[in-house]
Image 1 (cartoon, rainbow, N blue to C red):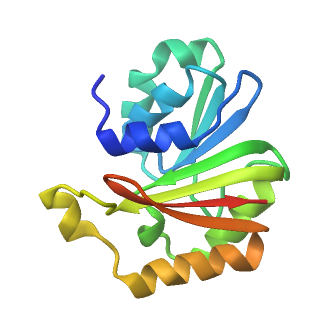
Image 2 (image 1 turned 90 degrees about the vertical axis):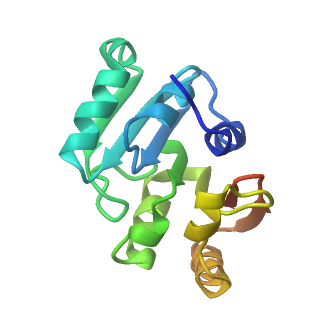
Length: 170
């Protein structure tokens, strides 16, 4: 399995301990899920049935062992109970959410008190040629930061090598 450098950087930000429950919003083909499931239990929601098939195949053993649970869903409709997750991570999909604020309210709802939300998007300090074209304009990044700040007690913005990352603590 090949992980991109941004995926490795983002995984390093997600503190996933043995007993932690992590939700990945928009798990795509399941590469990051596989990395995060090494330490704890990873759940995922993605609106695409095709991505669910790919990600399930990639994580078949971990799924059978009960360490990966992939479902259809979205940022604003996860289908999970209140205060269920220690960590939530969303990589390269926040700009695709139909309603940013509704998605953030839902992720706040499913996070435990003290839980952490990590949202990443293409960019960073040394983006690839493709990533440079996908960067969000600063006004959109400010909008994400402001929306996070209205819900979460602490919000930080980090410029990693290949991603712009927001970390918010409930």
